[in-house]
Length: 98
Image 1 (cartoon, rainbow, N blue to C red):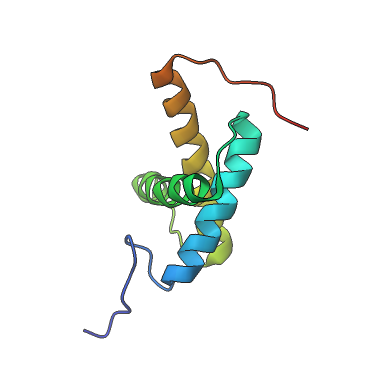
Image 2 (cartoon, rainbow, N blue to C red):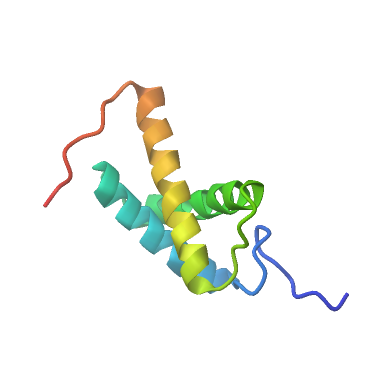
C-alpha cells in the first residue's frame, strides 16, 4: 500500500487538479473542434478525455505522468470525444469561433 491513491488511473493527480485540467482540456478541445458547451460539460469532457488519452498513450507505450503530459493526454482525448460526439449526432465540425 505504498502507492499513492490514483484518480481514474492517474497517479499524483488529485481531485481538484483533475477538475482544473479536465475543464481546461474540455474548453480548449471545444475551441479546436468548434463545439460550445458549458463549464460542467467541459469538465466532464475533459475528465473523460483524460482517461481516453491516458489509455491510448499507455497502449502506444508512452508514460503519462506530471501535469503537462496529463493535460496533453486530456486535450487529445477531449478532441477525440468531441469529434465522436459530433459524428454520432450527425453534425459536421463547425468553424472555430474566434
